[in-house]
Length: 231
Image 1 (cartoon, rainbow, N blue to C red):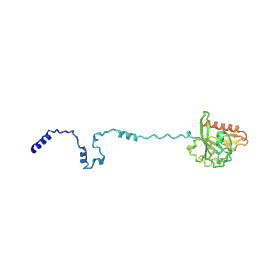
Image 2 (image 1 turned 90 degrees about the horizontal axis):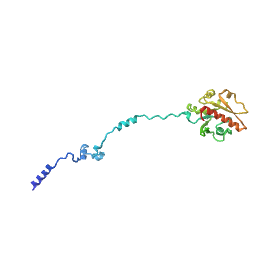
Image 3 (image 1 turned 30 degrees about the vertical axis):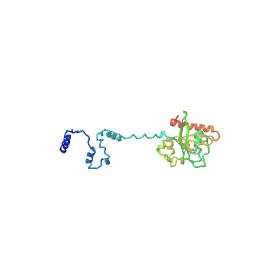
């Protein structure tokens, strides 16, 4: 019986066909290659070896990364908020303390203030098309850079040469050759001699008639319009 059983097992092995495409224990193969280390510890997908694909994405991405980003366009200083410089002396008719009332409404108020003096004041001028234009009014031009000077559309003079001390351009002749100058004075007081020597426009004000002050203010804005080309 034992001989027949062994003979039958031998015949079954002989009759069984060899399948070269049969299942392969890839995990055992990877274990042998990794010298017995657990395949799962290395997170290797032993059944996904045929899923690899190669593309040209790496070369494409390197070309994109090598391309330089365009630099942002520099701001044009002429397109920023224009500046009006007024005298810092409280004895002047127009100062930073009453600039808003005067340049917006033609009203002359006291040039002094009880609280701290502001470093700048924002005013608005309504154009003929209904749009409002913002201006910065300052009385200390010593901190203006050369690029900021390009934004200055008017310098209000008080007739004293020390007004321009410590400015980037301290010579009044040079200043009024670059920027349009103005002098606001009362109609019953003659303009200082220095003002007559400078390239400035003299605008007369009245202590009694507000409509005359508004007329002078309109002349001022008309000059600004001619220089800046605003409508």
